[in-house]
Length: 538
Image (cartoon, rainbow, N blue to C red; front, side):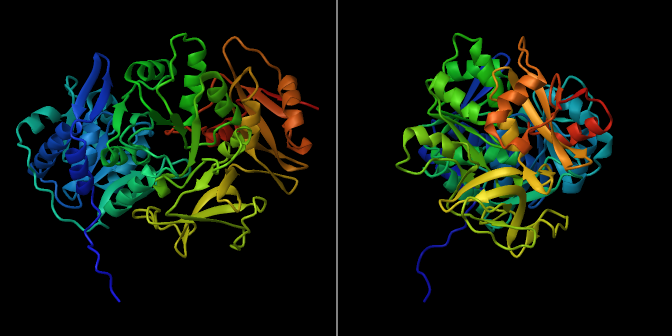
């Protein structure tokens, strides 16, 4: 028996039409050096039509890739709407990639057009002669450098077109956006999202059991639009009627606190390193005011327990942790305590990676591929599948990551009967000492709870007896002091004795990846080259 339900395609153009109709007067705010620019959803949708017409005039056809080398701003939002809806593919380019990696992803993706913010011209200019597929470069803002050769002006192009571009009918499984991983091991790998997957991901993000974005929200979008589509939030915003604040390059603690105080967001999304900076900047800012926020979201790396407690105790602010990756669009789990959890016990759930969201399946497998019990004890690698989970990389075979319809995440940990994930480590970062695993994530979280510590990253170093032992790399807060012995003693009551690092080093800063995570491969290389002054406790 067949269903009699209608079966229209799930397309980005449907998100546009819904947003411009129901929420025409909702706004996107872009922070600039000269103040805050505003545009309504209706104005943005009309400008997106003009952008699509301009791109079509440049010869962009269905399936062509259009790169965006941009900050979080209004023009980037217009590209998010226009490019997929005209049948082309938006390729969001990570502005923090090394030049050789940036050239690689542009060439591998075969971008034909790139839209670039004028402040980022010097970065793109470094590789202009290495990207032969790029026929046109469109600059958002005045181009006074000439460093890219002949360019087109964004506003001039839009001004020459009329709104009313007719969005074509597309197959919902056609490519809409492509995003490359951050390339922490080898070349970055491309993930291609379909219209259908992005549409369903937006619906999931609006669920109260996940992030719960709704019309009454105004979101401060700190997570970059080149990083997993800003966690899908631009589309969810248009779909739900939630306003957006785009911070562009103003991503330090002080400017973020100012935006929160003056623009009054209700939610904000960013990586833990950003929230750590905000937390410390607030200590010296008597005007810091988080009262407009109902919660903030952190993802991309494990959130230390002390950070959740600090926002709660000092500012009355809830920090919600989420888990995902480029390959999962990224929503996979959100750490919302089960209903009825006593207030004093909520933190025990909030420090976990998250609870599996409706629409995806997660399991834990051991080294042989056997599925482990969901008992919160059995440790293995997380695998995931669902309608917004990647089934392959673009143009690259990776049988070690995809099998039998499951994505192997590379995250190691446990899954309990309530669906909560606890991540012990990345498979490449786990410390194997004497045949047992030590969680670098847990050690980092505990060490960063010390009042003198700003950041801490733990890596494995070779050991003749135990194979590997932890080395704790510490950045102290300004004007704070702490010795290796003091930090060791602080940690001792909190973890198993054999976990305790005997190797410690103090650094001015910890290297970060292009998306703000601790770059442990750089730390391991620096240690191997003898660049660290290491204190070894007996």
